[in-house]
Amino acid sequence: MNFLKYILSILILSFIFYKITIKYTPNVIYGKVKSKMMTQAGIQENQTRLLPFPEEDDRAVVMPNPDFAYVSMFYDIEQGPLHITGEMPDSTYWSVALYEPNTSNHYVKNDLQFRSSELNLVIGSEIQKTTSIDGAELINSPTNEGFLLFRILGTKRTQKEREKIIELMKTVKAVQMI
Amino acid sequence: MKVAIKLFGVIFLSALLGGGYALMQLKSLKSNSDIMVRNGCWRVNPKMDLKQNDWQRAQIAIIGLFALRESEVLYFIASEDSDGEKLSSKYDYELVGTEPNSRYWSYTMYGEDYFLIPNEDKVYSFNLDNLSYISRDTLNPELPRGASKAYSILVSSDKQGDNWLPSGEEDQFHILLRMYNPAPEVYNNLEGVVLPTIRKVNR
Image (cartoon, rainbow over all chains, first blue to last red):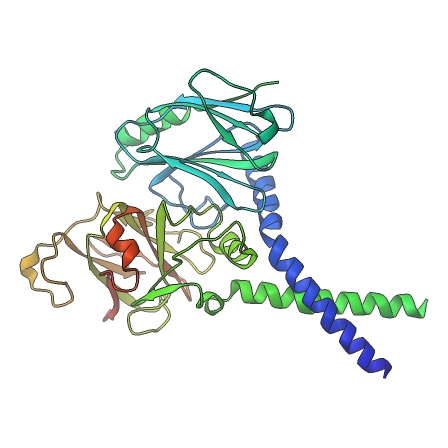
């Protein structure tokens, strides 16, 4: 009888652990990637990391696209919204995407949907909606922490194209509005 | 004391069984077959529900962290050739196809671990701009009639000429076709839209 009790307990608990693993695996992976990327780049939260056209040694995130230059940032808006500015290319695909710590993609917008190549974005929470900057788009972040990712396409792989995109990547800045 | 040890044993064993089985399932290529649409040797997720669906979110976190929604990009992945055998560096393959109907598209090679495959030439992918196209008069029977731009990519661990994708030394590799901003016809016909074939060729 005791033996059956143990088996039943193990089955029920195994099911619970199964569900917990499925639910929180993305958060664990996110945490590991965040720690790895910030350590490698020597950056803090709300600071940008530039990764122009990944190669075989870039192993922080699976399935990188070698045609893209990436500008990324782990953000934290608990102390106030973030104002993102910068310049993007005017004749190629680029996009901005935001992710929650559970890796859910809650925002994406590409160059055709933006009306300008001049970036003017504010990332804030629901309660920070009162914050406004002239002409800036307010992006509501469902969580205080998250990941911001710019993708800039460079398909020709010429030195000239690379240099131009890298210059643009460097213009992306984030300032916390406290 | 005995009760505490027994309790710890039950919890430890349960965590090992439940957690281990979950991770094993998440990493298995076959486990997501019910949510993926198959088109030849390619598989695509037609609806990336990362908000509500814990299972999909976990699986994508493992093999495609920070992927975009299907409204922006369609990710077609091939882990097998057109004859249903796993893609492996032991063999050479020819990928034959026509221009996908999307704003930007590319083919990228990934190793078993889903990272770029190391190679001296640092060639990891081909896209719409750096691929050498072949003329239609080659009468390649693999190509559909009326194809505007056709191409052939050779996947091999040995150095080749144009359109060579190095496959390194991978027991299993994957080819990812990305279609950014695809045409509505692609979304409406994921199972039938014309995609390349991948077939073994003699070394």
